[in-house]
Image 1 (cartoon, rainbow, N blue to C red):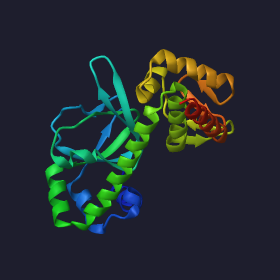
Image 2 (image 1 turned 120 degrees about the vertical axis):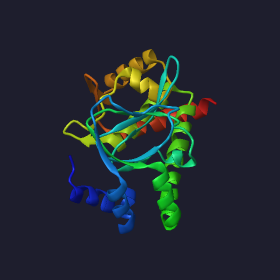
Image 3 (image 1 turned 45 degrees about the vertical axis):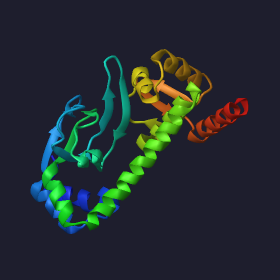
Image 4 (image 1 turned 90 degrees about the vertical axis):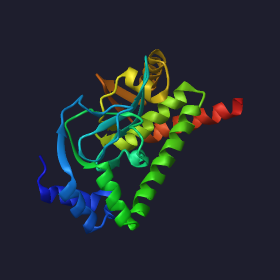
Length: 238
């Protein structure tokens, strides 16, 4: 469990690129509740009443949409980050949040948080910039998913995961989130069988290595080149 000094440091220097005011940090520490979650515990489900906003302090959380027969993974959060920004409109949670490892969050009552923002309007610009970044991320995700080529979709997703959740090793960049073919399919809106086949192809041409659920991108530059070449061929055919 984090002590107050460490928590203050995270909020002051890492959250929102260190742009939050001391008054905001004091507010979070006095009104927030530090909660610990084990792997596979939910913070909330889609459609639940949105009463709480969170700051992810440690661990990782998967945000996803739940259908009757499928799950669509929207994003995997890593600390520090504020979420879900969208509930500032007072409507229910639009997605579910599942911890994928031991996780600590600072939880704040949504109404209390909103009253503080109303008394400190300058903070709204900082939140707006974060929302703008998330919107750009969503546009990029929509662009990748709109690609007709399943290989392009999966290649782009692996490249993005290596960038955001990658750890450099002697063999390349390890994607530190354990991922099954089913989970990757949910991220890319593809069939699990298609993902399994494409992963095998990428292994055969030495772009990735897979051990159990751990995927290593052996050379991110070569993967990027492979994506660009496939995209160029796809455009030439249209």
